Length: 227
Image: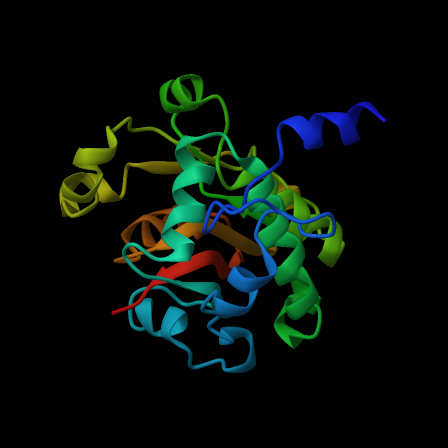
């Protein structure tokens, strides 16, 4: 009753176009849901996400759910998720993608879902990791444990300096590290992030995870930049 009254006086709006959501709509309206640019990467193991890491990192599988265009619906959604506290967006995207990924053979061998971590200082500033709810939703849908204690970030960087930092070969190996024991040996990790641009962040994370004996890595992101 209270929730219905709350929605009556403060109706929820679409994360894409800002129109009011109808009763059965969640996060985005039906119009945006149909217009949102999906990649269908999960149907093709030579997709653009895989190609980002070709010759750099040995991946079992890689895919992104959506295409990210400047001033597009996906950019608006990710901005709200990352900077406005709308974690329900990540949760919804994780639910959508888990339904698609259930049928991908490579996912039958994944042991843990690992999020790209924030530095502790950045986590305190933001109050949450924007990929956590995405990962937890994938975890529920795929029946794979979500573990956020294995991969850690050693270097703090402001958003505007992140590209320069990741572009420097003398520090890229030290940005991330792993905390592991024998139970993590010979495991297949699913590394997740919000948006893939150059792929440098996920490459650095993967190199850290590969310090674990016998580690195998797959990658999934909410979106990938697209020209």
